[in-house]
Length: 88
Image 1 (cartoon, rainbow, N blue to C red):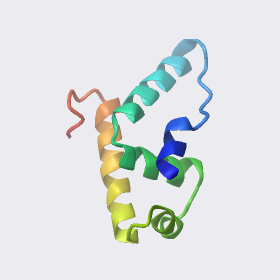
Image 2 (image 1 turned 135 degrees about the vertical axis):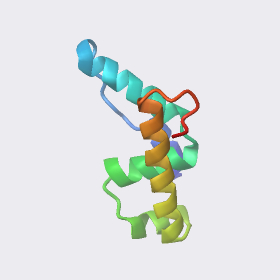
Image 3 (image 1 turned 90 degrees about the vertical axis):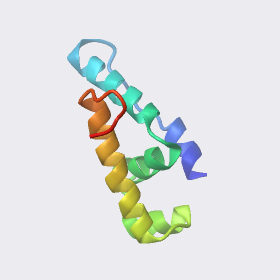
Image 4 (image 1 turned 60 degrees about the horizontal axis):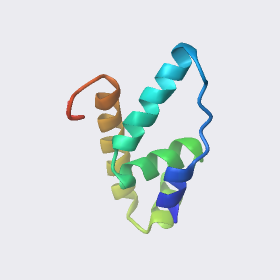
């Protein structure tokens, strides 16, 4: 299932330095997202899956894919910028 893939995706993290800190922050922020938001972000950005294919793979309308992407980006941005509850 696509949700399982989003959780198991192999993402190499640098061991030290500023890049490592940024990677850890990104991983924490991604982990704080709902499974639906993690899934659409992972498939859209990491697998470069178009919206139409995402809709078929997830068995949801394309409009729902776009809405989830919008909300996932907003939440992720808020988490990375340090908002306590992920709200902007």
